[in-house]
Image: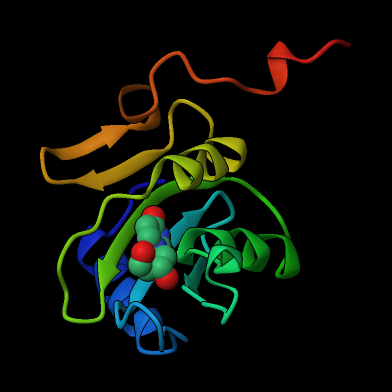
Length: 129
Ligand code: THU
């Protein structure tokens, strides 16, 4: 499945418009091409108890599950003004859970697999059977 990166970036920017970010003022949107061809998106959702805020990639993982499951094939994250944003460490782990090492990510260095963005990742294979 070949990602249309321009479409994914545009979907991330539109998702960012739904952000609830009264505390940071940073609108974040994430989008992913899913293994069955659909696109899922997410936006950050902050909280007055600051540490409880949800990143855009987290809400996107919820959307993945809510709309039929599957695997992330390619992911893009953007601010509301269109800047490329790299997923934070926690979000890289969340993307890895549903995309694995071959999932592609839009980065400032170009399109990279998660195996390069989160090297030697902890994954389900490290849990006891
Ligand atoms: N944020 C995301 O949504 N994704 C990331 O990967 C990094 C940070 C959000 C969290 C918070 O609402 C805002 O950006 C500022 O940190």
